[in-house]
Length: 73
Image 1: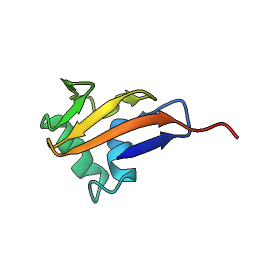
Image 2: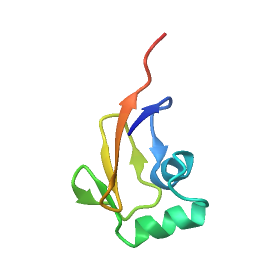
Image 3: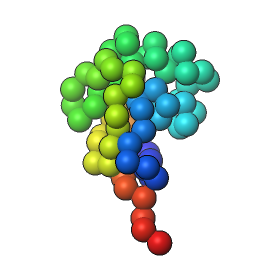
């Protein structure tokens, strides 16, 4: 899936919540702290990591997210 980033960055746990991959922020934080999120091929354990355009995330081994910059209007 693709996520269009409207700001400079989004915190990782908020991104998981916005994309409805989890029901609560607490679940998002647990998924991250348990090592289920890869950011650009590396395990990301920081719940508040600043996700920026160009990042590629894999969640749980089966959900991939490409973060892209918002198109200028």
